[in-house]
Each structure stands twice: as structure tokens, then as C-alpha cells.
Image 1 (spheres, rainbow, N blue to C red):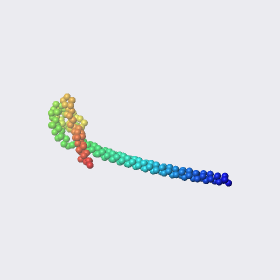
Image 2: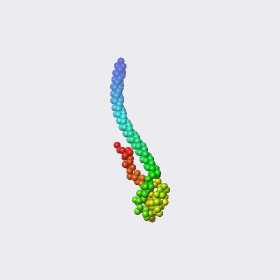
Image 3: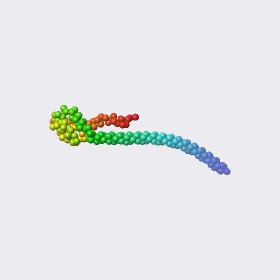
Image 4: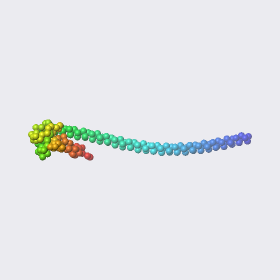
Length: 185
């Protein structure tokens, strides 16, 4: 029976060693799982933070895009309105009943310029202009009103057409007009 007790002792030691190995493996497993859990929790926190930052960045960018688009729409509307006002002013000037009186004042003020040259005007103003400048009348031009004075040698022209004068005034005043219509906050 000595052999049986040796075998039992070897088996008992084997079981004890196997149990120790199993316990050590179990401890290693638990340690590894805990490390993996910590690493994954840390990674999850980093990813959540990155996602929050990306979402915030996207929100800010979307908001900025929306603000720019709304400003673009407002500016386009303002430009359309100003263009419409400009067109209406030109329409009114084209049928302005006091045009003759203004042409007389313009011709009186520029008499020294046209005495040696020619004066051109629109078809509707021929009688008024010809009546004032006589032989210095140079013919008709395409205009809604006003005059163009040409020097005797034709090298210089003074453009006093209503369209040109309005363009000059418009360019010089548009900022002020826009500020009156749409004041800054």
C-alpha cells in the first residue's frame, strides 16, 4: 500500500498545485480585467470628451454659418431695396416737370464752358436747350435728362446728365442712406 499512498500524495500535491495555479491565474485574470476596465473607462471618458468637444465645435460652426447666411440674406434684401429706390428715382427724373427750369440753371452756371463748344441733351429737352444755346446745340443724346457739354475741339466732355449726377450723389450718400434706413446696433 505504500505505492497507493505515494500516488495519493502526488495526486493531492498535484491538486494543491493546480489549485494554486488556478488561484494565481484567477488573480491574474482579475488584475487584467481590472486594468482593461480602467483602460476602457479612461478611453471611454476621452472619447466622450472628444465627442463633446467636436459637437461643441460643430454647434459653433453651424451657428456661425447660420449667422453669416442670415446676414447675407439681409444684405441682399437691403441691396435690392436700394436698387429699387435708385431705379424709382431715375423713373421720376425722366418725367420731372421742373426739368426745364433746372436745365436753364445748369446752362447759366456753365455758360463759359459751352460758349466755345456744343451742348447735347435728350430728345424731350431739345426745345429748352436749343432756345438757350442757339447755334451751340450739338444734337440729342440718349439720356433721361440733363446735358453734356463738349469742348470746341471735342477733346473734353462735361457730363451733367441726370443719370451721371444721380450716380455721383448715390455713391457719395449711399452709406448715409443705409445708416438711416438700417441703423447699427
